[in-house]
Length: 445
Ligand code: CA
Image (cartoon, rainbow, N blue to C red; front, side, top):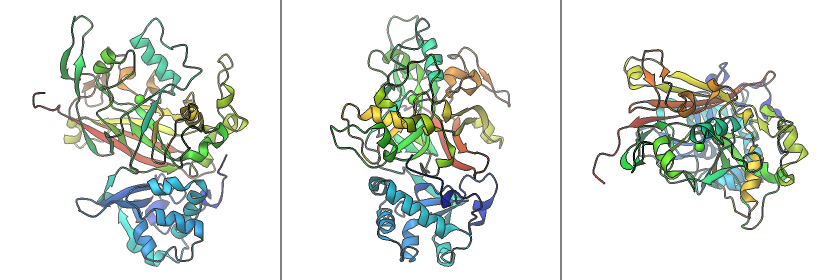
């Protein structure tokens, strides 16, 4: 493992930003996730910040205020990379620079830090901010790492062969669409596509009537590998800058007609929503878990296996998905939880995804995005999509206010949340990734 538990994870640390010390806070001083923000409604340039409690530390302002005047060369290189309007330059530097900057930020934001006097003017409350994507995402690949999701969905699409024979050997993925990735808070226009009902001879062009979410973890790549040179499993984690939440919006009726033989296309290419904050792999060090396979399953092939992978390639991250319908919003009701799961159920580790992705020689680049695939847990209530929760649309879900849902309706807001919590360490959160469905494009096409 690249990272060890160190002073930045010390659970006794408190911040001079008071809201960071509240129990249950997503962004205590032990977290320090990066995002790209500006003052809401302004025409200011987007810039990089770090979430601390209910505030954002503006790294350009912190740098200009002299907070890094005494920094060593590595830290200086890292903070200078944050003067860009996206995280790509910082992501390109690699783990040593990321560790140096995290340590510097941890020391600056601690209760006793003398810099707090000047740094207070570099804070912006999160409720006065708007966000942009954390990185310019060059390429996006979506995987399929929950065997529970793959089996449940396979049963709906192919009752005779739910889990295809390759699943336990190869991390299944497809190349997704980067241009339609957006940030939390966005509106998502209901997509139109070709849809063919089972009892019809020919498809029609229509807005999707089976619009769904997928509860996923996003993995943002840092560093790169040269074209033609695979990343060995024990180097794979050095290519992970951090993790975020990812909603892979999916039109099931379009998907069912188009997906064979080359996989999803228009059913997935209209929108993907990310959370604004990227939680670094170092911040997640206390929440690593052993990675294992059921004894009857084939062991991973040698290029996907290592002692380190088996010891701690898993990540214990709680995940949940909530819905707020238009009626709930008008009545002032909070979002209602639909499902809860955990990333430790993933059949493949993030390191295995990176190594497999590059086995062919494919070059990953700083700012590339990998989706984990829908993270459904072992029981039906832990499903990460409406397709599973409503049994393919056959069993509507009853909401607390009397409404029912099989798939999403216009006005529905879907909220993904995540956090990691373990005895002896400080809980850290991911914030949220939310998106609201709006009516389809109305002009004729
Ligand atoms: Ca997906």
